[in-house]
Image (cartoon, rainbow, N blue to C red; front, side):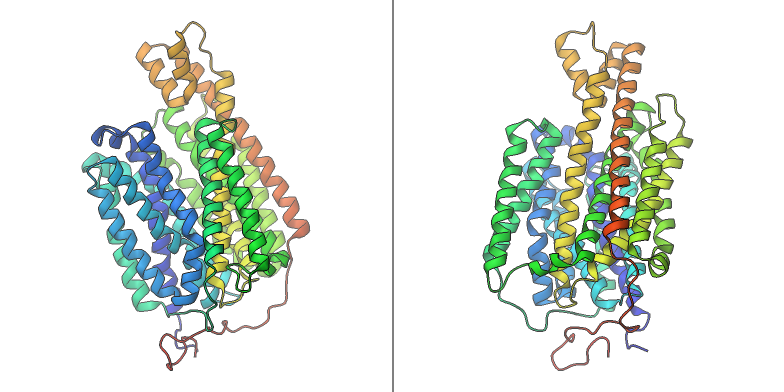
Length: 515
């Protein structure tokens, strides 16, 4: 038996904590924004940058993070990222101005840029193809739990303590993860590091930042705004320059040969499709619970728990299904369940009870739980252990962009459906414009005017937009299922029952972690 034995699974448990803290921080800020607007006297623009700073830094540094992990040691980089994430959380908690909080959020994005891909790359190094889907399911489940946990924990903390507590909650989780990673995770790195591709790093950072920022702006201002499409166009152009450079340089940041792998391409695409639809639902459903059903923020988080239950239930048997039926069938079946859940969600109306929402969220979560481990395992199998850091960073960067685009595109469909249906006849022009801005503003105006008719119209219009969004999401998932079945590789003969050889020892001259 390996010297590591079952310690590998405890190490993955410690890494799962890092995924949880990153996911928790992603959602908890949304709960705190109204309080921050008052306590820090933050403008709407400042509030937007509190969210955007995290996403932009995350996008810019994700590929360099994978490179540094491969060169200098993945364990070392994860530990350093946990320190950065903890320090940034303290900075955010005690920020005395919007500017300081924005800087702190950017620092959180820097920590997250290392934690997200390196967690997956370690799975590629520690586990063989027999065990990898199960290890990925553990890592994914922790992050999945964190999304509804953010509103639950954040709402409770805001009720009992001051707003900074929503950031301080990261610190004990990071400390626990740090101790676990330090004690349990073996070091791994590239045996023969390549020279750093500095032009590739800069071009990739600019391309991913441009695409991310443009999609964020599109969600706020619409796709027709120059503030939306100009950064997207710039990101695409720079991305093409990046690809051209990578094909010509001697030591590329990304080995473009990986895109010749059908398993890699379709695995990444299916994981991105899942992220696209999942984040659209996570964006819309809290608004539905709060604006239409009148639930508080904390209660909205609780009502999202069925998606986590389904996700955990799907992730459990995913590896067994991959072994028996192949990645293509498993991913296709998961996407069919995801589509079926969202089709059921289109039956929602203003008077629907929670039973319908809970049921379709569970089915959708079950599909997500099947798709992610199988799709990621397919993509990771195409990577060498030595370059798993940069390869995992590429996978996660593409997923991140897909999630951002999903929120922007599906959010636009939701907003268009709402604005096209809400009835503002008889309202003064300024109030009508406020109502059409979003459902929260519409509910606030209706309550101020004590107009039951306007309140019903606002809620009905939002549900109409939600149904349109779910229908589009279901269609995307269904098309993805067909493509997965046709193009993804099926069952493949396993090369070895042993774990992959580690690429370097924890210390020079010492025994390798798998000896």
